[in-house]
Image (tube, rainbow, N blue to C red; front, side):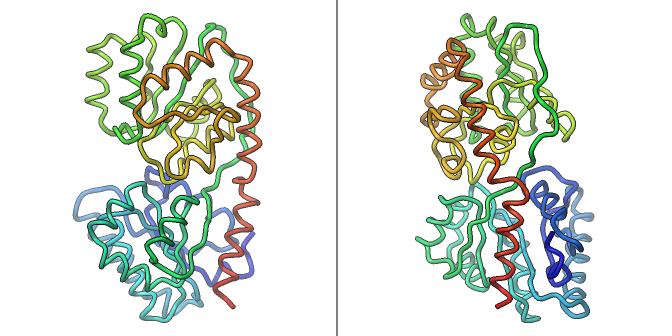
Length: 349
């Protein structure tokens, strides 16, 4: 518990009731503090609601910095519009001479930086420390010389309190949870299934949870008659997500790019083998032929072969799943809390 200094830390980020990895992460952090000072800088809604929240959040930031014993302002940001929005709080905190942690999330940060170099460099140099979630991004931020003080702080997950759900259908249950988006590789999976439908349709059930380009996804499923072995569950809350993880045998997430892969980490905590790609932060999580199988991004032939291998060799499911569970342990709250506490201590020296 970060109790001794919790009153001196202000966290700013997206509404914790929202969807997405940053909201989930901030929820997890809140449980590590005796007193969690938090300002929601963004939430879903119409333009009026978003504008009102932005004004209120900035005023609250000033209030905390003036009237509360805040020493450190921990700001969570993604890319594009969110980075510009969160930069306001960086400037606000520095006006009041607070230490600033700029915690960078988002798989598209490289693309964003290439198109907004001057502004991103200016904001990043204002921060006292940059925090990111994977070794890939540590190397990238150092290469771009965006700050002299860069800290690795992986995302957090929890050890499940319940075990897998037994199934009697003699089929392998595959799972994807994430944005329905081409960069997540979901359409590569569907194309792979369409091409190999005759072989796969009686051997697997593919569960999908998430929102995004559902129109394209549903049209593809209908056009290629895949609905007999694909189940779309929509956006899944924590309870439904837990049930899906407990039902699954394999987690399939062949992203084109991934800054970290929080859903992969969650799947690992449920001791699932992972089929993924060696991009971004995924290599911090998945070791090829140890706790999963890594394939080239967009390579549907390799994807099919990986799935078929695990269908034909079910004995690997247990061992790879066990290794996933072991690797997930270093991302459980006690380990991450210790690193977070070390980060705050380094700024108080």
